[in-house]
Image 1: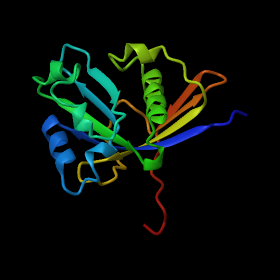
Image 2 (image 1 turned 90 degrees about the vertical axis):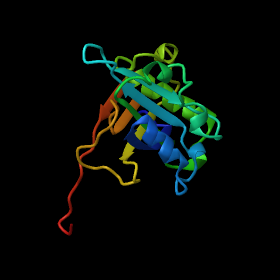
Image 3 (image 1 turned 45 degrees about the vertical axis):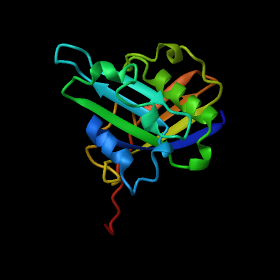
Length: 181
C-alpha cells in the first residue's frame, strides 16, 4: 500500500464573469485577494470552436488580481467573448500556502486534465514526485457551499494520484442525507 504524502482541500468560488470576479476580490468581507492562489477560466469564442480552458496559479500573496487581469497572456485573447467563466481557489488550510505545495497542486491538475486544458503544455509533461490527494469544494460568490447541480470547471471533487503506479483516480462526491435533516 502506498502512502499518500500530500492531501489538500481547495475552496473554489465561481463561476464568475470577469466583472463579477473583479467585484468579488474587492469586497470588504473577502478575507483578501492574496488568499487566492489558483485560478481557472474557460470560454468559447463561438459554438464552432472547442472550449478554451486554462489553469493557473499565483504564488505570491500580493493579490490574484496581479496575475488574473486583462493583461494575462491567455485571458486577454478572450475578453471579447460573450461568456468567460472564472473560478478562483484557495487552500482551505492557509498554513499550506507554500510555493512548493501550490506548484505541486497545479501540476496535478494539469496532468490529470491535460486533454481538457488547452494550454499549459510544459506542465502536461512534468513528473509528480509523490502521491497526492486533492479535494475540491465549490462555493458561489455569496460564499455558500454548493452541493447540488454544482456549476464547476472540468475538475472532479476528488483527484488522487498514485506515484508508484503513475495512476490518476478521479471522482465526485454525493451528498449524504441524514434522517434529522
